[in-house]
Length: 123
Ligand SMILES: [Mg+2]
Image (cartoon, rainbow, N blue to C red; front, side):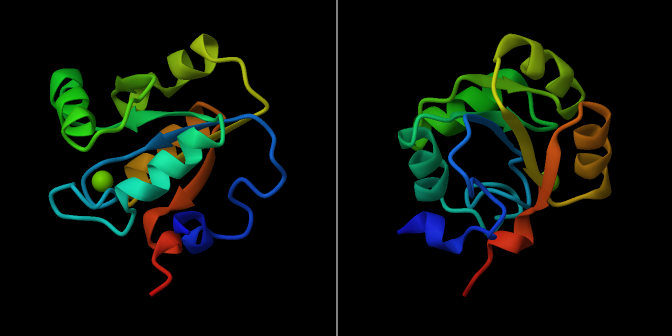
């Protein structure tokens, strides 16, 4: 069960949540690879939450990566686009997961909760 690797405050109460994943250093298919398995992102989506990525990679590259791993994401964009994600998808919570201070910065600017990718590294 991939979500068992998530920290306790992540999706704890079932509120509709938008989850933005950084890719490099965060997702297992990033460069460098991060601790978050594709299966975890898919499990979040399967619960009805809105998932996508906020990465320094181009939108096309992000879309191709998710497609290559069989995940249907609702948005891709730069970390600085998180305010637009908030406008596009009404939800009760907004979360960004990343591995750098830059991720944390843009999460704060867009009023997203922030989780470090290493918080998902339960092994
Ligand atoms: Mg990163």
